Length: 353
Image 1: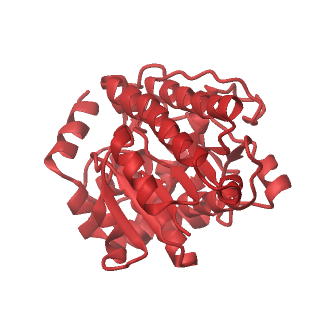
Image 2 (image 1 turned 180 degrees about the horizontal axis):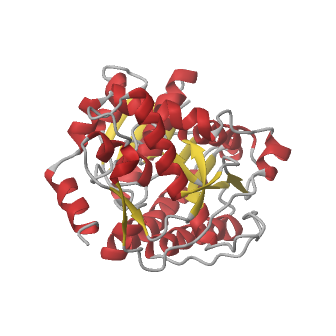
């Protein structure tokens, strides 16, 4: 038995691969294009492990997909591969259309052909699990109910629009062709191996480097934060027992404003790695111009996955963020490796004003 994971060198995908192989011996074929956010160093602990087969490639490469499916005969495909940074989608949306829309289409077609030729028992057991985001639902008013699985799609950025399109394709391939799919829509993830252009790792890395901690606008944008390894356990549970054709929202029950997140990280760093001058890292907080079309609030109603599959997150935000800060303090070499010239140029461009 084998599973195929796409995007398995990125933040969430790599954590999933590591957790999967820590939890059992079923091999993983890991397909990743290794763009700016894909990082083989995330998988260093699997070097020489025969259970992990890494292939560098694009989910938009139909010939490669066909070859991998034919060779490895996976019982399931888990699609983590995506362009996922809203800011980058604003500056360059075409990559998001190519990977998230065209790439998902080509993956669906390759999987449909492979699945259609399986023996009856294998065909019945096969699953395609598509990993998506709560951003497809749009934004919430301060007192509005959290996003449920029946909430209408109202994406507001090129990124979320491209993910919404991919979700619709997955749904259509199930209803039209019978492809046995599962979809998860998760809230904001955080934890080890998070590329440091997203809020939490950016704040940790900049604080330690003595740089400004950039906060969009007033910093009162609210997100539901999910520790990445809780997300991985939810995906394993959905793959194991989820009902074919269903969507499961995965959240951390942790609504937090961005400015409160940053202040908490500063307090943790004040405790764990104090500044040489004895001052608080909070002095480095700097407000910058808000991003265009910035959604004000996301919140996930994760009662369905708890009710039907018995899953709840193991971490509170307080326990998860402490583990995350400690991980970054203990892995300076990983941070140094991902901070390439291209990364520095991006940060300089994004927060220039």
